[in-house]
Every structure is written in C-alpha cells, then in structure tokens.
Length: 231
Ligand code: ADP
Ligand code: ADP
Image (cartoon, rainbow, N blue to C red; front, side, top):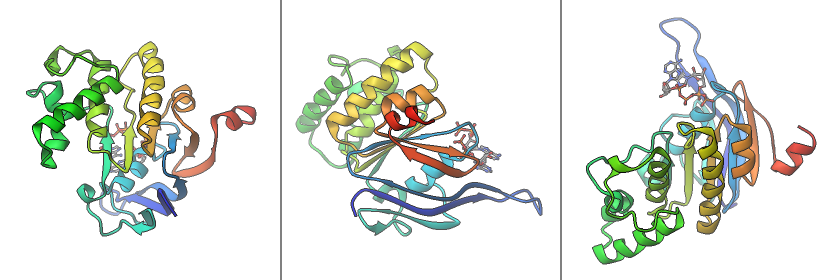
C-alpha cells in the first residue's frame, strides 16, 4: 500500500533509576495515504511529538512498525527516509538570505545554481513571498519566517512532510490565515503531510482528516466534517 503506515507504534521514555518510565505513544495504528494532510490533534503531553519523531526516525520504537510505500523504515536512518521536517521555530540559517535558506537542500543535492534559482523563485511564489529572495532572515516577521521554513522544507520535494506545531509561536489571527495558506500550499504541491497541533480550529482548517490523540492513544480518525457532526 502507498503512503505512511504506522502499526501498533509504542514510544517509551525511561524514568530516572528505578522509577517507572512514560509510555508516550501506546499502540497507535494509523495510515496516511499519498497526497493526504493528516492533523494529529490532542492536548499538550498526549504524545503527538513523540509519534511524529518516531515516524521521522528521531525516536526509537519500543514496539510496532513505521513503513512508507510498504517498506519498513526500522533500518532507514533519518536522512535516508526522504521526509521533510518543520518545527515551531523554523530554525532558519541566520547568515543566509531567503534564497540561501530555501535552496539549501537543493544545494546539498548538487542541483546547479540556475535550476536552484528557478525552483526557489517558484516556491517563494507558492508561499506568498515573491520578491523576498534576497531579504536577510533577520528582517522577516515571525509569519514570514515560517513561510520561508515551509518553502525550504518543500524544496527537496519530500515524499512525506512532518510539521510539529509550525504555527504555535505566532499570534492567533496570523495563525488562522497561515493555516489556510499552508493547506493551499501543501495541496498544490500534493505533499503527503502530518501536521501536529493542540489547536482544534487549526487542525480542522488544515487537514483532510484529523487523528485525535489522548494519553498516548489514538481515539478516532475522521474528516473535519464528520468530527463536527458527532464530536
Ligand atoms: P505532545 O507533543 O502531545 O505535547 P510529547 O510527545 O511531547 O507530547 O510528550 C508525551 C509524553 O512523553 C509526556 O508525558 C512527556 O513529558 C513525555 N516525554 C516527551 N519527551 C520526553 C523525553 N525526551 N524524555 C522523557 N519523557 C518525555
Ligand atoms: P512540545 O510539547 O511542544 O513538543 P515540550 O516542551 O513538551 O515540547 O518538550 C520540549 C523538549 O523537551 C522535547 O525535546 C521533549 O523531548 C523534551 N521533554 C518533554 N518532556 C520531557 C520530560 N518529561 N523529560 C525529559 N524531556 C522532556
């Protein structure tokens, strides 16, 4: 089958000495078909980040499997998974301009400068930042920085994009507008995505389906429309 498959995933953290550890993710099973945006929604501490990091390969599984297009990823290191990552603080390179940030992954792949330029120009248009190529990162607003971070994450054309609370550091009004723009951008690019958030309205705006988590367990997965009918 195509896309992301998570089967009975468990993530545990050891406690100090003999103290009991934490089961952050408790037997979660989840599919994200190609082209879908799935929101992972739940209160702080329910295990969303742990699950996302396990999918990325940044956290080891204590049980279960993560696979993509039918391939078990257990032995595939983070940088070989072909996934893109975007965090709350986009962590742009402060000493590169916007173009240098967005083109970074392409440069690492050995893509020639002229082709890089063209691709970066297109990506900046996609995220609403046409004409920003030579702006210094320090002169950008918080929202503009996250738009650049999104363009940078999309540049290498990841087969799966993992977004961990990418809008949480922004103020509410900006978040609503950006959630819509992020959805449009991801849909246009056709990028399979998992979007972690604790914010209901953000999840319902951005996602094709919403996976509701609590205390490490997956409670339900459904479209925003059906979740609104019977919450
Ligand atoms: P969320 O992303 O939903 O806020 P997390 O996945 O960050 O949830 O955390 C789930 C649980 O795992 C919480 O109880 C948290 O305290 C714990 N946890 C997360 N990361 C670690 C860690 N590195 N070491 C120990 N416990 C952790
Ligand atoms: P978020 O919920 O936004 O993912 P947190 O503030 O819970 O972030 O966690 C920030 C960092 O601290 C993460 O790297 C996480 O792994 C780590 N962390 C979270 N909870 C614990 C914990 N109980 N013990 C140790 N590290 C933790």
